[in-house]
Structure formats: structure tokens, C-alpha cells
Image (spheres, rainbow, N blue to C red):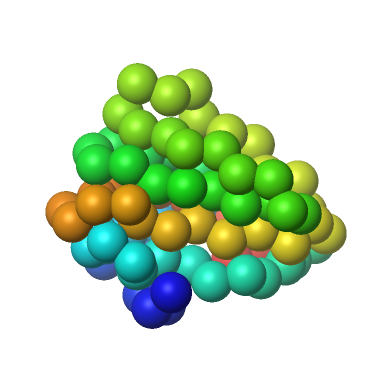
Length: 92
């Protein structure tokens, strides 16, 4: 997987938001951190891998809460995928 930086990032009312624009095979490789965050896919589709389990998400999927301290990764499954991570300000 090819790691990508956020296309947009901002803080709003104590929430930090990272917006990623990814093509197939790009995303956030396996990593861990101590805080929880919500992930959602706004267009295209992604696979979220958490501790060996996989979940495919798209624009119709409820945002997913990723628990802190568990390794996870997010990978775009198609070109022009947009996914978003939201977490507490100062954590990311």
C-alpha cells in the first residue's frame, strides 16, 4: 500500500478532520495510536483492516469507530476514493 497525506485537514469545534483523496492501493498502512477515531468513506470504496479483520465501506456505510491501541489500516479499493478520519483535537 502507498501511504498518502491528507488532502485537507482542519479543526472544527474541538474535532480534527483529515480528508484523504486516494487512488486504488493508496491509504494509511498498518499503524496504531492511543486515541479512537471515526472513519467514513465519502466516495469510492475502502477496506479497513483491524487486527486481522476486514470491513469494506463506501458512501452508504455508517461511519466506523476505530478503537485506540489496536493496529489498523485503510486502503482505497478504487481510484478517486475519498475517506475521512475524525478525532479529538490535538490527538492526530
